[in-house]
Length: 481
Image 1 (tube, rainbow, N blue to C red):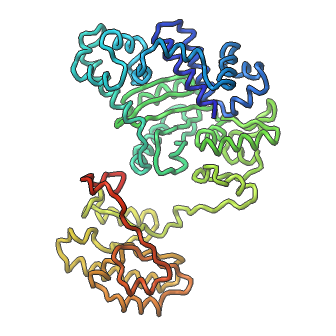
Image 2: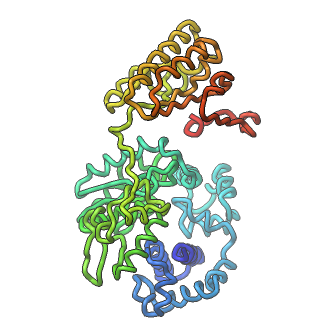
Image 3: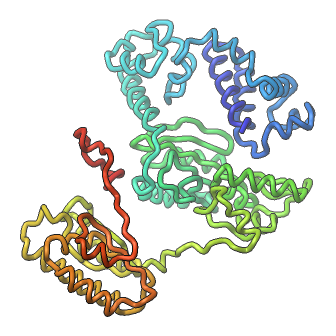
């Protein structure tokens, strides 16, 4: 989408102008224009097609910036940006994005020490060369070293599970602040993507300035990148970036939909709205100057003729068409989960004891059984390990024969067969006599006995082609386990 491309160019122009010491009002004009385009939901080329007046009707877009937008849409380049780039050393822009490095500091570092990259910044900070510069003391040097580490880690995507606890704890803190009427984590976090790049918080409030002032001072926040009228950006310990955005209560639902995304899903919704003569943005669904919906998210979808679409489906993979046809898939709910396929306790590489796992499962209302003791090759008592495997088979037989399940997975069940703790033929005979006809039974594991392979209706094999372990790279927390 051209919006993001032009917004980035304008933001870079603002940074380069500030680095060169140009008029602060020019810097501010490009910064505000960049924010307008970044937040704009309607494709900028669609607005530009309506003429200069339509572009100038956008916040912070005057005749000069409207002309530059048209230039980029027409040529794919921006001459003013190219001229500024010739005056600013390559790499300075990434140095400017380190929290705490403003335009004056960046220019001082470049003129005195030749700093035009993050690597050079790291070097002059680590070697303490910066201590000879005006305004640089040991505290500032240490702070910039920490901020440099934050900037480098902030661009990394993290497994959802690795940030879940930290994010939910922060959400509780946010909701507890005076003036916060509602708060939710949006973005890829709310869509339950496998990884998240940052955390996007939406807050409904009537006093945005006071709320943001309180939020940027919460425990666990190690750096404040920016604070504006209705948004703030901060970093948590470990480098995770958090963006706070405030909306009035009347726009809570539309803000929730807007900030949750995905971008592709939101673009299709806006297109649907336009076909109905409506406008959809973060502040509501509009017909002319009249807001039709915005206070609750379900109302936003309803105004567009759709049922509410669960966030995990919002990826523009046919969910809008399915909603129009009344064929949205029903997502599995937490209360419907009957068990966990695999958990790790402290016995191996987990963080909780077996008792803690059992208590947590009981609290969630799911079935949980202590079936096995982890890695067989680490067993301290092989007789006990075998006994646990036999007990697991007893429980499995009970569940299989009950007729209460549509699907049962016996994870890594091939191992007690491989090690002859269970007789393969006896297992097969029992399954032939007792498995309900409509039950799907899945058995996983390596080295399945030939008799089991012959008995199965479907057999697939996953084999290693290449693995980093062969190069000496061990399993990484949050990735492999």
